[in-house]
Amino acid sequence: MLQISDFCFFCLSGSGKTSYCRKMKEYLSNKFGLENVKVVNLDPGNDVLPFKVDVDISELITVSDVMDRLKLGPNGALLYCMDFIEENFDEFLIKQIESAVENANTKQPCWILFDMPGQVSNVNNFCCQILIHDLW
Image 1 (tube, rainbow, N blue to C red):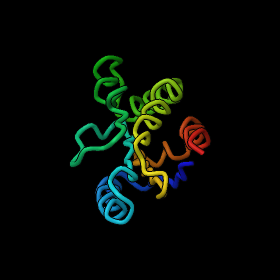
Image 2: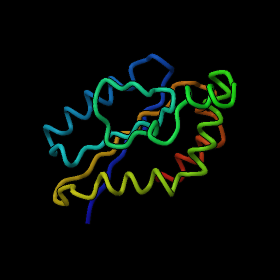
Image 3: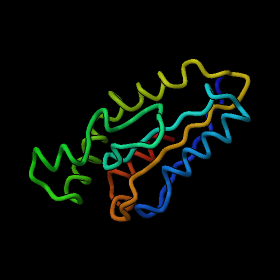
């Protein structure tokens, strides 16, 4: 049976969450193998990543697309995205994560690193709390 350990990174925008995820992936991959370390980008505002992630929410929705289509500002678009992610959680996110860990070595723990949006208002947002609850 696969043992999954996960980390969810919350911090202010621009504080280095994505860089930390990249470095943590390198560190854990050296220890447990690349197939046992996955990064999930749950920030729909971070659609240009400096490294390849295993699951990217921007394949489903991005803040810039919502701003263009619905004529919302960045905060309203981010809140819309979080609600949209919640509505499509099982259909998109859970399936993507299950697929990402499919080839993990069951003799080692599998690490899933979640890179979250940095806007403090979203950390307290109800839909973000539901996402965290559904992940665990």
